[in-house]
Length: 311
Image (cartoon, rainbow, N blue to C red; front, side, top):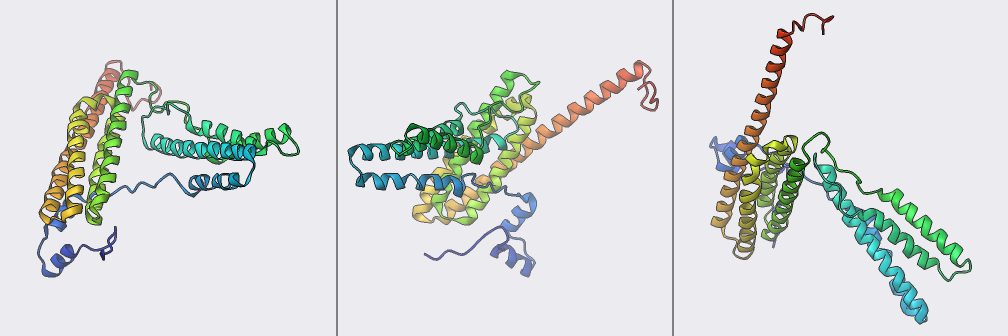
């Protein structure tokens, strides 16, 4: 089935017609009012990581042309290198999630470090049985592990953004953000079944505002209680609605269901925007109160901002 191309800079036919006739379309009005700026997240798994899944098959293919001992050796190399490739991919994804957040816990399992070890063991096993024996095997293993670490780096080994803040609060925020990101990822996976680029773009705009709320909570962990309903009940409801819509629309292409789903995103997005603005305004008011209290205290002690010597 032919699909019309659409993207960030592709004009909306309804909005273009409205501009030509002087009318105001619902799509144009919603876009002008909210003007979400989608944050397109780049997939951290690149060609280097994908290449790691291809190279081990050289040993798997050659295993069937060896004697039994050689076949076991080559299949062992294949298994270790595939394990290293999988650990590397998961480690890269975990590090990207760690880098995207202001408050984050270090990964529980240092996947990339384990991947370097698995790579070294795999290449060491590949060099076993050559003329150099264990000496060549050890060189292959050490060089392979070092090159893997140099190429992909190490896992984050410490928590981020938790210094000087109540550890219990930051743990709660980190868990809430991780749970919210899982819900957003599930929504992105589900909406692909609808095969509608405009709806996918609309969902990205909604997710942008959700992540703005996540950043506001990370900046002030004390605000988690005020945002818990949005990051829990509302977001789970949005995920469930997205899954049901994607399944229904993928089968029936029901225009009414599409309009209802977009209207739901509009309502949820407005609520998330208002909650984010409320949290930001609350932080700003608290800062102003702290500044006023500090100024009054300085004035009582006879310190004036215009008196640099006393300051």
